[in-house]
Length: 418
Image (cartoon, rainbow, N blue to C red; front, side, top):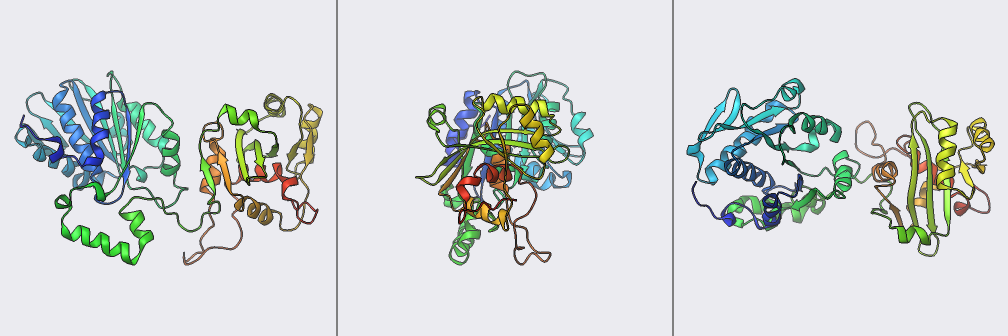
Protein backbone atom coordinates (compact mmCIF):
# COMPACT_ATOMS: atom_id res chain seq x y z
CA UNK A 1 0.00 0.00 0.00
CA UNK A 2 1.35 3.42 -0.93
CA UNK A 3 2.50 5.50 2.02
CA UNK A 4 0.41 8.65 2.31
CA UNK A 5 0.77 11.18 5.10
CA UNK A 6 -2.34 11.72 7.17
CA UNK A 7 -1.99 15.48 6.82
CA UNK A 8 -2.22 15.15 3.04
CA UNK A 9 -5.67 13.54 3.22
CA UNK A 10 -7.47 14.58 6.37
CA UNK A 11 -8.17 18.16 7.45
CA UNK A 12 -6.74 19.16 10.87
CA UNK A 13 -10.18 19.29 12.48
CA UNK A 14 -10.49 15.52 11.94
CA UNK A 15 -7.22 14.45 13.55
CA UNK A 16 -8.90 13.75 16.88
CA UNK A 17 -11.72 11.82 15.19
CA UNK A 18 -9.15 9.71 13.36
CA UNK A 19 -7.45 8.90 16.65
CA UNK A 20 -10.82 7.85 18.06
CA UNK A 21 -11.31 5.44 15.15
CA UNK A 22 -7.82 4.04 15.66
CA UNK A 23 -8.40 3.56 19.39
CA UNK A 24 -11.33 1.22 18.63
CA UNK A 25 -13.15 2.48 21.74
CA UNK A 26 -15.89 4.38 19.93
CA UNK A 27 -18.78 2.93 17.91
CA UNK A 28 -20.87 5.90 16.75
CA UNK A 29 -19.55 9.04 15.01
CA UNK A 30 -21.97 11.92 14.40
CA UNK A 31 -20.18 14.21 11.96
CA UNK A 32 -21.97 17.49 11.34
CA UNK A 33 -20.83 20.63 9.63
CA UNK A 34 -21.21 23.05 6.76
CA UNK A 35 -20.19 23.06 3.13
CA UNK A 36 -16.59 22.20 2.40
CA UNK A 37 -15.93 20.77 5.86
CA UNK A 38 -14.64 17.51 4.24
CA UNK A 39 -16.63 15.34 6.66
CA UNK A 40 -17.73 12.98 3.88
CA UNK A 41 -14.17 12.75 2.61
CA UNK A 42 -13.03 11.83 6.11
CA UNK A 43 -15.57 9.00 6.39
CA UNK A 44 -14.66 7.60 2.97
CA UNK A 45 -10.97 7.60 3.84
CA UNK A 46 -11.57 5.88 7.18
CA UNK A 47 -13.66 3.14 5.57
CA UNK A 48 -11.12 2.40 2.84
CA UNK A 49 -8.23 2.44 5.32
CA UNK A 50 -10.16 0.30 7.80
CA UNK A 51 -11.03 -2.40 5.30
CA UNK A 52 -7.47 -2.61 4.06
CA UNK A 53 -6.20 -2.85 7.64
CA UNK A 54 -8.74 -5.42 8.87
CA UNK A 55 -9.13 -8.32 6.40
CA UNK A 56 -12.30 -9.69 8.02
CA UNK A 57 -14.34 -6.51 7.56
CA UNK A 58 -16.69 -5.03 4.96
CA UNK A 59 -18.78 -1.86 4.70
CA UNK A 60 -22.21 -0.58 3.69
CA UNK A 61 -22.79 3.03 2.61
CA UNK A 62 -26.37 4.30 2.68
CA UNK A 63 -28.53 7.15 1.46
CA UNK A 64 -32.22 7.62 2.17
CA UNK A 65 -32.89 7.50 -1.59
CA UNK A 66 -30.93 4.93 -3.58
CA UNK A 67 -30.95 7.11 -6.69
CA UNK A 68 -28.40 9.41 -5.04
CA UNK A 69 -25.83 6.72 -4.18
CA UNK A 70 -23.80 6.89 -7.37
CA UNK A 71 -23.11 10.62 -7.32
CA UNK A 72 -22.43 10.82 -3.59
CA UNK A 73 -21.08 7.99 -1.44
CA UNK A 74 -19.93 5.84 -4.37
CA UNK A 75 -17.92 8.63 -6.00
CA UNK A 76 -16.63 9.73 -2.60
CA UNK A 77 -15.27 6.26 -1.84
CA UNK A 78 -13.76 5.96 -5.33
CA UNK A 79 -12.06 9.30 -4.65
CA UNK A 80 -10.70 7.94 -1.35
CA UNK A 81 -9.04 4.97 -3.05
CA UNK A 82 -7.44 7.33 -5.52
CA UNK A 83 -6.37 9.83 -2.85
CA UNK A 84 -4.68 7.07 -0.88
CA UNK A 85 -2.90 5.85 -4.00
CA UNK A 86 -4.54 2.42 -3.92
CA UNK A 87 -7.17 2.61 -6.68
CA UNK A 88 -5.35 -0.15 -8.59
CA UNK A 89 -6.22 -2.50 -5.71
CA UNK A 90 -9.95 -1.81 -5.91
CA UNK A 91 -12.40 -3.02 -8.53
CA UNK A 92 -15.23 -0.60 -9.27
CA UNK A 93 -18.64 -2.00 -10.17
CA UNK A 94 -21.78 -0.05 -10.86
CA UNK A 95 -24.26 -2.88 -11.43
CA UNK A 96 -24.60 -4.09 -8.79
CA UNK A 97 -22.93 -1.09 -7.18
CA UNK A 98 -19.94 -2.11 -5.07
CA UNK A 99 -16.21 -1.67 -4.56
CA UNK A 100 -14.12 -4.82 -4.16
CA UNK A 101 -10.70 -4.94 -2.51
CA UNK A 102 -8.91 -7.27 -4.91
CA UNK A 103 -6.29 -8.81 -2.57
CA UNK A 104 -8.96 -10.26 -0.23
CA UNK A 105 -12.37 -9.87 -1.88
CA UNK A 106 -13.68 -7.54 0.86
CA UNK A 107 -16.52 -5.34 -0.28
CA UNK A 108 -18.06 -1.94 0.13
CA UNK A 109 -21.78 -2.24 -0.65
CA UNK A 110 -24.27 0.54 -1.36
CA UNK A 111 -27.90 0.62 -0.31
CA UNK A 112 -30.84 3.01 -0.44
CA UNK A 113 -33.23 3.08 2.53
CA UNK A 114 -36.14 3.41 0.10
CA UNK A 115 -35.73 -0.34 -0.50
CA UNK A 116 -35.58 -1.76 3.03
CA UNK A 117 -35.82 -5.41 1.88
CA UNK A 118 -32.47 -5.08 0.15
CA UNK A 119 -30.94 -3.82 3.38
CA UNK A 120 -32.35 -6.69 5.44
CA UNK A 121 -31.01 -9.21 2.93
CA UNK A 122 -27.53 -7.68 2.81
CA UNK A 123 -24.90 -10.39 3.25
CA UNK A 124 -21.17 -10.73 2.66
CA UNK A 125 -19.46 -13.96 1.70
CA UNK A 126 -16.56 -13.53 4.09
CA UNK A 127 -16.02 -11.63 7.31
CA UNK A 128 -18.67 -9.24 8.58
CA UNK A 129 -19.93 -5.68 8.02
CA UNK A 130 -17.97 -3.50 10.40
CA UNK A 131 -18.37 -0.07 8.76
CA UNK A 132 -21.79 1.54 8.26
CA UNK A 133 -22.13 5.01 6.77
CA UNK A 134 -25.34 7.06 6.76
CA UNK A 135 -24.66 9.96 4.40
CA UNK A 136 -26.98 13.00 4.60
CA UNK A 137 -28.61 11.19 7.49
CA UNK A 138 -30.92 14.12 8.25
CA UNK A 139 -32.91 12.91 5.22
CA UNK A 140 -33.88 9.74 7.07
CA UNK A 141 -37.23 9.61 8.87
CA UNK A 142 -35.60 9.45 12.30
CA UNK A 143 -33.25 7.54 14.55
CA UNK A 144 -35.62 4.58 14.73
CA UNK A 145 -35.37 4.06 10.99
CA UNK A 146 -31.58 4.05 11.17
CA UNK A 147 -31.62 1.78 14.24
CA UNK A 148 -33.63 -0.77 12.28
CA UNK A 149 -30.95 -0.73 9.60
CA UNK A 150 -28.01 -1.01 11.99
CA UNK A 151 -29.71 -3.86 13.83
CA UNK A 152 -29.88 -5.74 10.52
CA UNK A 153 -26.27 -5.03 9.62
CA UNK A 154 -24.44 -5.22 12.95
CA UNK A 155 -24.12 -8.98 13.19
CA UNK A 156 -21.29 -11.44 13.64
CA UNK A 157 -18.53 -9.04 14.60
CA UNK A 158 -16.86 -7.78 17.75
CA UNK A 159 -16.21 -4.17 16.65
CA UNK A 160 -18.32 -1.78 14.61
CA UNK A 161 -17.94 1.77 13.35
CA UNK A 162 -21.11 3.66 12.41
CA UNK A 163 -20.71 7.06 10.74
CA UNK A 164 -23.51 9.64 10.46
CA UNK A 165 -22.64 12.63 8.26
CA UNK A 166 -24.95 15.58 7.64
CA UNK A 167 -25.43 19.33 7.47
CA UNK A 168 -27.56 20.39 10.47
CA UNK A 169 -31.03 21.66 9.52
CA UNK A 170 -31.85 25.23 10.50
CA UNK A 171 -34.51 24.32 13.01
CA UNK A 172 -33.69 23.13 16.50
CA UNK A 173 -36.95 21.18 16.19
CA UNK A 174 -35.47 18.92 13.53
CA UNK A 175 -35.31 15.36 14.81
CA UNK A 176 -31.60 15.04 14.13
CA UNK A 177 -30.66 18.21 16.01
CA UNK A 178 -32.58 16.93 19.01
CA UNK A 179 -31.18 13.42 18.63
CA UNK A 180 -27.55 14.51 18.60
CA UNK A 181 -27.99 16.30 21.91
CA UNK A 182 -29.13 13.01 23.42
CA UNK A 183 -26.43 10.97 21.68
CA UNK A 184 -23.75 13.22 23.14
CA UNK A 185 -24.41 11.66 26.54
CA UNK A 186 -23.30 8.20 25.38
CA UNK A 187 -19.79 7.02 26.24
CA UNK A 188 -19.40 5.10 22.96
CA UNK A 189 -20.20 8.14 20.82
CA UNK A 190 -18.28 11.07 19.34
CA UNK A 191 -20.05 14.25 18.24
CA UNK A 192 -17.87 16.18 15.81
CA UNK A 193 -18.49 19.58 14.24
CA UNK A 194 -16.41 21.01 11.42
CA UNK A 195 -16.46 23.75 8.81
CA UNK A 196 -14.39 24.87 5.86
CA UNK A 197 -12.20 27.24 7.88
CA UNK A 198 -10.05 24.35 9.14
CA UNK A 199 -9.49 22.97 5.63
CA UNK A 200 -6.35 23.93 3.67
CA UNK A 201 -7.32 26.65 1.23
CA UNK A 202 -5.82 24.90 -1.80
CA UNK A 203 -8.10 21.90 -1.15
CA UNK A 204 -11.17 24.09 -1.59
CA UNK A 205 -10.01 26.50 -4.25
CA UNK A 206 -10.40 30.25 -4.64
CA UNK A 207 -13.93 30.22 -6.14
CA UNK A 208 -15.32 28.31 -3.13
CA UNK A 209 -13.74 30.73 -0.68
CA UNK A 210 -14.97 33.74 -2.65
CA UNK A 211 -18.55 32.44 -2.62
CA UNK A 212 -18.38 31.85 1.11
CA UNK A 213 -17.06 35.34 1.78
CA UNK A 214 -19.65 36.93 -0.47
CA UNK A 215 -22.46 35.21 1.41
CA UNK A 216 -20.95 36.16 4.76
CA UNK A 217 -21.06 39.81 3.77
CA UNK A 218 -24.54 39.77 2.26
CA UNK A 219 -26.45 37.29 4.45
CA UNK A 220 -24.61 36.32 7.62
CA UNK A 221 -27.38 34.10 8.98
CA UNK A 222 -27.51 32.04 5.82
CA UNK A 223 -23.69 31.92 5.76
CA UNK A 224 -23.61 30.58 9.32
CA UNK A 225 -26.06 27.84 8.44
CA UNK A 226 -24.70 26.80 5.04
CA UNK A 227 -20.96 27.24 5.54
CA UNK A 228 -20.48 26.95 9.30
CA UNK A 229 -23.17 24.32 9.84
CA UNK A 230 -24.81 26.26 12.67
CA UNK A 231 -28.39 25.74 13.80
CA UNK A 232 -29.55 29.26 13.09
CA UNK A 233 -33.24 28.61 13.64
CA UNK A 234 -36.16 29.31 11.36
CA UNK A 235 -37.17 32.48 13.18
CA UNK A 236 -40.32 30.83 14.48
CA UNK A 237 -38.91 29.32 17.67
CA UNK A 238 -41.12 30.12 20.63
CA UNK A 239 -38.58 29.41 23.37
CA UNK A 240 -35.10 30.78 22.78
CA UNK A 241 -34.08 30.47 26.42
CA UNK A 242 -33.81 26.66 26.55
CA UNK A 243 -30.72 24.92 27.90
CA UNK A 244 -30.49 21.14 27.79
CA UNK A 245 -28.09 19.61 30.30
CA UNK A 246 -27.90 17.09 33.11
CA UNK A 247 -29.31 18.49 36.34
CA UNK A 248 -27.01 17.11 39.03
CA UNK A 249 -28.12 15.37 42.19
CA UNK A 250 -26.51 18.17 44.19
CA UNK A 251 -28.70 20.71 42.39
CA UNK A 252 -31.80 18.62 42.95
CA UNK A 253 -31.12 18.42 46.66
CA UNK A 254 -31.04 22.22 46.82
CA UNK A 255 -34.43 22.72 45.12
CA UNK A 256 -36.79 24.37 47.59
CA UNK A 257 -39.44 25.87 45.29
CA UNK A 258 -40.75 22.77 43.57
CA UNK A 259 -43.90 23.02 41.49
CA UNK A 260 -45.85 20.09 40.07
CA UNK A 261 -48.38 19.99 37.24
CA UNK A 262 -50.18 17.50 35.04
CA UNK A 263 -51.86 17.51 31.66
CA UNK A 264 -54.51 14.87 30.99
CA UNK A 265 -54.35 12.54 28.02
CA UNK A 266 -55.00 8.89 27.33
CA UNK A 267 -55.10 7.66 23.72
CA UNK A 268 -53.41 9.72 21.00
CA UNK A 269 -52.44 12.38 23.54
CA UNK A 270 -50.21 11.36 26.45
CA UNK A 271 -50.76 11.90 30.14
CA UNK A 272 -47.98 14.16 31.49
CA UNK A 273 -46.86 14.82 35.04
CA UNK A 274 -43.89 17.13 35.62
CA UNK A 275 -41.90 18.43 38.57
CA UNK A 276 -39.98 21.70 38.23
CA UNK A 277 -38.01 24.05 40.46
CA UNK A 278 -38.55 27.79 40.09
CA UNK A 279 -35.63 30.00 41.07
CA UNK A 280 -37.40 33.34 41.29
CA UNK A 281 -34.29 35.38 42.16
CA UNK A 282 -32.39 34.29 39.08
CA UNK A 283 -35.40 33.91 36.81
CA UNK A 284 -34.67 30.26 36.06
CA UNK A 285 -36.86 27.21 35.78
CA UNK A 286 -35.48 23.68 36.16
CA UNK A 287 -37.49 20.82 34.62
CA UNK A 288 -36.12 17.73 36.33
CA UNK A 289 -38.82 15.02 36.44
CA UNK A 290 -41.40 13.76 33.98
CA UNK A 291 -43.90 10.94 33.79
CA UNK A 292 -45.12 10.75 30.19
CA UNK A 293 -47.41 7.87 29.19
CA UNK A 294 -50.03 6.92 26.64
CA UNK A 295 -53.02 4.95 27.96
CA UNK A 296 -51.89 5.20 31.58
CA UNK A 297 -54.42 4.01 34.18
CA UNK A 298 -55.28 5.93 37.33
CA UNK A 299 -53.45 3.48 39.61
CA UNK A 300 -50.29 3.72 37.50
CA UNK A 301 -50.48 7.52 37.48
CA UNK A 302 -51.09 7.75 41.23
CA UNK A 303 -48.17 5.39 41.92
CA UNK A 304 -45.78 7.46 39.79
CA UNK A 305 -46.85 10.73 41.42
CA UNK A 306 -46.63 9.29 44.95
CA UNK A 307 -43.12 7.95 44.27
CA UNK A 308 -41.86 11.33 43.08
CA UNK A 309 -43.97 13.29 45.56
CA UNK A 310 -44.06 11.24 48.80
CA UNK A 311 -45.00 14.25 50.94
CA UNK A 312 -48.19 14.73 48.91
CA UNK A 313 -47.41 18.29 47.95
CA UNK A 314 -49.89 20.11 45.74
CA UNK A 315 -50.22 19.13 42.09
CA UNK A 316 -51.94 21.59 39.76
CA UNK A 317 -53.95 19.72 37.16
CA UNK A 318 -55.73 20.57 33.96
CA UNK A 319 -59.26 21.56 34.99
CA UNK A 320 -61.03 20.14 31.92
CA UNK A 321 -61.01 16.64 33.46
CA UNK A 322 -62.81 17.00 36.84
CA UNK A 323 -63.71 13.32 37.08
CA UNK A 324 -60.10 12.29 36.40
CA UNK A 325 -58.91 14.73 39.04
CA UNK A 326 -61.37 13.18 41.50
CA UNK A 327 -59.98 9.73 40.71
CA UNK A 328 -56.52 10.91 41.77
CA UNK A 329 -57.85 12.60 44.89
CA UNK A 330 -59.44 9.31 45.85
CA UNK A 331 -56.00 7.75 45.59
CA UNK A 332 -54.44 10.26 47.94
CA UNK A 333 -53.02 12.78 45.46
CA UNK A 334 -53.34 16.45 46.49
CA UNK A 335 -54.90 17.83 43.31
CA UNK A 336 -55.78 21.48 42.69
CA UNK A 337 -57.54 22.29 39.43
CA UNK A 338 -55.94 25.04 37.36
CA UNK A 339 -58.12 28.13 37.14
CA UNK A 340 -59.53 29.42 33.88
CA UNK A 341 -59.16 32.88 32.48
CA UNK A 342 -58.95 34.83 29.22
CA UNK A 343 -55.67 34.69 27.33
CA UNK A 344 -54.39 31.88 29.50
CA UNK A 345 -52.17 30.17 26.95
CA UNK A 346 -50.63 33.40 25.63
CA UNK A 347 -49.98 34.71 29.14
CA UNK A 348 -48.40 31.47 30.31
CA UNK A 349 -46.14 31.06 27.29
CA UNK A 350 -45.13 34.71 27.48
CA UNK A 351 -44.15 34.20 31.13
CA UNK A 352 -42.02 31.20 30.19
CA UNK A 353 -40.43 33.12 27.30
CA UNK A 354 -39.41 35.91 29.66
CA UNK A 355 -37.54 33.67 32.06
CA UNK A 356 -33.80 34.10 31.90
CA UNK A 357 -33.36 30.37 31.34
CA UNK A 358 -35.34 27.15 31.21
CA UNK A 359 -33.06 24.24 32.06
CA UNK A 360 -34.31 20.83 30.92
CA UNK A 361 -32.63 17.55 31.82
CA UNK A 362 -32.81 15.58 28.53
CA UNK A 363 -32.14 12.26 30.26
CA UNK A 364 -34.84 12.38 32.92
CA UNK A 365 -37.18 14.56 30.84
CA UNK A 366 -36.66 13.65 27.16
CA UNK A 367 -40.17 14.60 26.08
CA UNK A 368 -40.00 18.01 27.76
CA UNK A 369 -36.65 18.58 26.07
CA UNK A 370 -38.15 17.63 22.72
CA UNK A 371 -41.29 19.73 23.03
CA UNK A 372 -39.73 22.89 24.46
CA UNK A 373 -36.85 22.96 21.97
CA UNK A 374 -39.09 22.07 19.04
CA UNK A 375 -42.07 24.33 19.75
CA UNK A 376 -42.39 26.72 16.81
CA UNK A 377 -44.91 29.07 15.29
CA UNK A 378 -46.65 27.86 12.16
CA UNK A 379 -46.22 29.53 8.79
CA UNK A 380 -49.07 30.79 6.67
CA UNK A 381 -50.09 28.76 3.60
CA UNK A 382 -47.80 30.74 1.29
CA UNK A 383 -44.92 30.53 3.77
CA UNK A 384 -44.38 34.28 3.75
CA UNK A 385 -45.04 34.94 7.43
CA UNK A 386 -46.07 33.37 10.74
CA UNK A 387 -49.59 32.58 11.86
CA UNK A 388 -50.84 34.43 14.91
CA UNK A 389 -51.27 32.47 18.11
CA UNK A 390 -49.38 29.48 19.46
CA UNK A 391 -49.95 26.04 17.92
CA UNK A 392 -51.98 23.60 19.98
CA UNK A 393 -49.92 20.48 19.27
CA UNK A 394 -46.78 18.83 20.60
CA UNK A 395 -47.15 20.96 23.73
CA UNK A 396 -48.26 18.51 26.43
CA UNK A 397 -45.25 19.08 28.69
CA UNK A 398 -45.51 22.82 28.06
CA UNK A 399 -49.10 22.77 29.30
CA UNK A 400 -48.09 20.76 32.38
CA UNK A 401 -45.41 23.34 33.19
CA UNK A 402 -47.91 26.17 32.77
CA UNK A 403 -50.23 24.51 35.25
CA UNK A 404 -47.38 23.77 37.66
CA UNK A 405 -46.31 27.42 37.75
CA UNK A 406 -49.81 28.87 37.95
CA UNK A 407 -49.24 30.74 41.20
CA UNK A 408 -45.98 32.22 39.91
CA UNK A 409 -47.76 33.60 36.86
CA UNK A 410 -50.56 35.48 38.57
CA UNK A 411 -51.37 38.74 36.86
CA UNK A 412 -53.17 41.35 38.89
CA UNK A 413 -53.94 38.73 41.52
CA UNK A 414 -56.00 36.66 39.10
CA UNK A 415 -54.87 33.34 37.66
CA UNK A 416 -55.42 33.14 33.95
CA UNK A 417 -55.34 29.44 33.18
CA UNK A 418 -57.20 27.42 30.65
